[in-house]
Length: 163
Image (cartoon, rainbow, N blue to C red; front, side, top):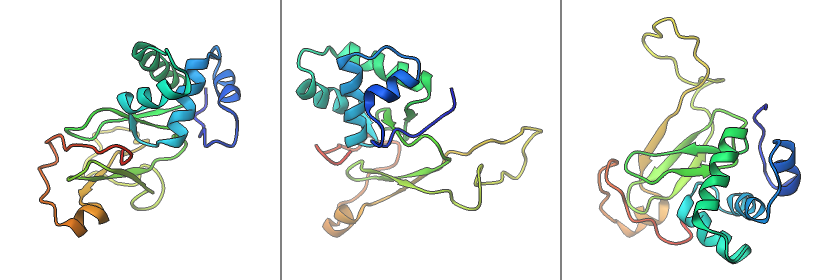
């Protein structure tokens, strides 16, 4: 399936069906949670899904996320030292900013030009298609609070609502 962006313009049911997957209340709740919480971890998605579709098992959330990733509905990202996160912005070659204090993740468009955005000093014969870049620093809130950042390989505590 061609990668597309589920940005809320189409219903979760329609996006799931278009991906060739069976529509279930758990899958709808997971996709809706991702639309509302970009860059969410599976645990954060589960907490949201539990409110949307009470009784949904954590394993069902993991299964839905894996199915969506395989079908091209979501993208997995895993900044160093952080839990795996999921996003619905999949139709472009964008990168991420990660706060080393609170773990907040934001999208940033291509660094330079069109995909793959960066050109390695040697491509070893590879036909490059994309690049993944993670920028590390402090978000405006943490910078204003002058919180000392841990190293990017540590797992900063992510506060509720800031993932």
